[in-house]
Image (cartoon, rainbow, N blue to C red; front, top):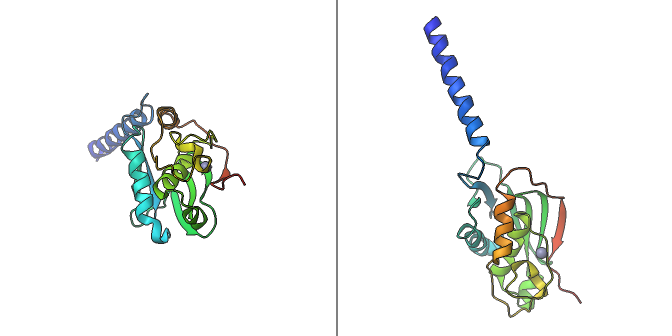
Length: 179
Ligand SMILES: [Zn+2]
């Protein structure tokens, strides 16, 4: 009985130390997993998957995965007739919309999806007008089909997810172009 109790204590001690080691890793040994839910994305589910893959193929410290049954998604995805937008609650968490207003205007859907996910990953809008900048969003021409983050945007996202101390002020970003 005593032996069994000692064994149990040893097992929990080992488990505790494992948790400590995983939590204190200096650089993310494994990327942070964020689960996204396209069940309400309507006709844009595939576009959001494409947007997620864009980040997955480049970012080292974060990974976007389709939510599995019974798990609460980090990112809820919707569609409506307004402008695309992102509502962030904390780093890696929030809601995004594909808005048909921008689709009708001719903006490139994968660029919109990658851009809105960029907000969830902690990037603000930067209205530079440059197509090379993913976070210039609607400020680049509708002809812009670049859906990839530039080196600076990518570095920022990887920095955001390198530690868990980055706080993001909750806010809503809207794709709407300047009139
Ligand atoms: Zn934006």
